[in-house]
Every structure is written in structure tokens, then in C-alpha cells.
Amino acid sequence: MSKKKKVTIVFDIGKTNKKFFLFDKNYKEIVREYTELPLTTDEDDYPTEDLAALQNWIKDNFNAILDDENFEVKAINFSTYGASFVHLDQKGNVLTPLYNYTKPMDEEILELFYKKHGSKLKIARETASPQAGMLNSGLQLFWLKYKHPEVFKKIRYSLHLPQYLSYLFTGICVSEFTSIGCHTNLWDYDKNDYHEWVYDEEIDTLLPPIVPTSASINTSYRNKKIKIGVGIHDSSSALLPYILSKKEPFLLLSTGTWSISLNPFNDESLTDQDIENNCLNYMRIDGKRVKASRFFMGNEYKIQVEKLCAHYGKEYGFHREVQFDQELYLRLMKHKAVYFRFEGIILKRKMISETDLNSFATFEEAYHQLMIELMDLQIHTITNAIGNSEVQNIYIDGGFTDNDVFMKLMSHHFQHYNVMSSHSPLGSALGASMVISNKKIDETFLQQHYQMKVLQPLIFNL
Image (cartoon, rainbow, N blue to C red):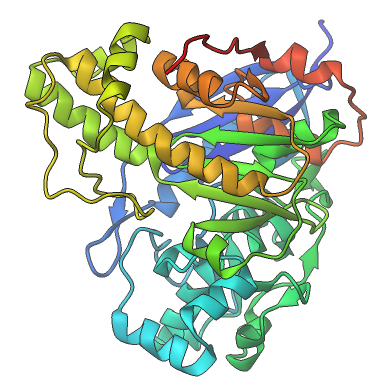
């Protein structure tokens, strides 16, 4: 009988895609499954994650691997999107829907919060969280306390989503740094403790003890000994393989629904200006800060590309074939102007009343213009994240590494840096696998796992 392969299971839960990975002891991917689960709605009919469906999907996949004769499961971990709390009562029952971080928050509750605890800018600066309603997940607890007091009274523990998934396997409630530190409004980075308002509102009593992200709980399941991780926030997880294998300072540009510039080598406190520029801090697994700036690039890109396809009569997906056209680019840059009205991006830029596509003869031309306008914001956010740090290397990962126009513009605008595309569909899953292992890795690790490519700068004069 062939020997069973020892594996780590990682559940990587994105807003859209739910992924399930098996890694061997050298972090080689053996199995990968993707699914999209239908949403449900909360009590206000706002669309949200179907927690029961997610749990069933996780349980089914886990049991299938346990039953598989080829594998011996040694460990499990979870990486998920942030800004999402699961509230449990004394008996461990889930009390509310998993509120969607895009759900608008009641203005009067926000007003009450700032009246009680300090101005928007003050709170944002101290918690390193640009103020964004439900996206500051700590505010969800404040909102529950004043909007649904009868439910709030029943809460024993509030768990961030990665820790809730871990709890399903261990029955143990914990908090950990990367989830606390991601734009939650909960953490005072200068004090290195929960913010004053958390204690004033007695919300600290609902947050379980903090453990290191690398902590794991040994449990016995069906007579098998399995190490269960406490979960990790996906942005911090995506950063981890780079931090563990690279010694010289770098910036990671993680692209997808959000474009997030992550600089683990900039630990300055945020200024008022940083907050206005949508900068924030994430947390490394050791609690150190990571300066980041982000904008809703992938979301905006999708909205605008759908409009381009409709306007030029193209199938959605046509944009994926568009290659960078230098001549077209130089022509557009000669008469540089704003043609697109962005709908989901709050960064400061010239506002126009409506998008003008009549100035462009072809889909390709309009598409290049869209990418130029998005790139202006990308340059701005990367420059903010670099700040005064000694960064020479920029790694780009995520969905936009397949976008030829985006990558050529990146290599052009950052030609004084070493710009590399790193192609790994593993992203945050690999970090979640590594954080609960004690295996050391070296410089060659990224090369082996990430198909690193150095981008050549474009040579032309504007």
C-alpha cells in the first residue's frame, strides 16, 4: 500500500471565490478547489455571505480529504477577508448574519460615535483606519450596541471571520493581530493596545484573548492528531512569504478588487494627510505595523470595462486580450485629460459630470485611456506607501499581473525600481500554510513558488 502524503489544508475565503488548498511539507500545492457560493440577505435585505453554506462547504471538503486514502492531514489553517465579525452567545450559537462590509451604516450612529469618542480624523489617525463605516469592523459592534441593543446584550464573544472558522474546529475563542489590525478602528497603533473607545464602550470584554498568529491548537479529530491554526487576515497572509524569504526592503502591490500597496518597512505613525490619502496600517504577525495605501481599483475597473463592452458592442472578456500599444499610449499622453467619471473611488481627482467615450474611436483606445487614469491613482498610492523608506524592489501579485497594459505602465512609471511580477494563484493561502509551520525558507523560495519575472522598463521619451 502506498504511503499517505502528509498535507496541510488551507481554506482561503475571498469575498467572491472560496478556495481550498492542500500543501505538502515543502509548500507544494497538491490540490486546489474553487467555488462561488450564492449570497443570502440580512434583516434589511442587504446581500451578505451565507455563513451556513460556507460552513457546509468547509466541512464537506475537510471530511472528503480525511476519508481520502492518499492523504494524512497534519494541519489546517484559514485565511479570509477582513472587516467581518461573527457574534456568538454563551452557548456558541451565531446571533446575527455576517454583515457585509459594504452595507451602509446609519448616519445617526456614526454621528453618535464621533460625538462620544473624537473626530473622524483623530480616530482614523490613532487607529490607522480611514473611516469607512462597516469596513471599520469595530464600528459594527458599536452599531449593534445602539441599533440592536437586545442582540448586543446576548453577545459573549465576537470573532473575526478567520478566528471563527478556526473555532468551528477547536471550540476555542481567540483574537489575533492581523485581524485586529486591518482597518478595524479597534487598535491604537501608538499605544499598542485596543483604543480608548473600545474600553469606554466595554467592547473589550467581547473580544477573546489575543494569541500570536502563529499559534495553533492541537486537537484530536476522528482519532487523528491535527494541528489547527487560529486563522489570518488575507492581506497580511499574502505578504508573509515575501517577509519570510526576502531580506532587503520591498513594497508588495497586491491587486484584485482592491489595489493595496503594502510596505512592511515603513513604521511611521500615520499623519492627517496620510489618512486623507486613504493610507492605513495592517499588522504583521508579530504585531508590527505595515504602512499601506489602497484604492478600489479592481471594483472600478470592472464597472468601467462593462460600460466599454456595452458601448463598443464587445463580449465581456474582450478586454483580457488587449495588449499594450505604445503608439496609442503616446498619442493619448500628448492630450492628457480626464475622460472617465469613476463611481467607487474616493481618492481626490478631477471630477467630471459623465464619462466621455465619444472621444475614442475604438475599444482599445478607450481601454488604454481607462488604464492611464487608473495608473495615475496607482502611482499616487504606491508613492504614499513608500514614504521615506529605502524600498528598491516592488513585487506585484494578484489579478492585474495578467493585464498587459497595467504591467507595462507599472514598469514605465517605476523604472527606477526593480519591478517584478510574481505569479502565484496561492497568494494568501500559502502564507496561512507557512505561518503555522516552523520550517525555515530561504531567498530561492519565491523563485520556486511564484514564477518571479523582472519587468523591463519601456524606453521612450514623453
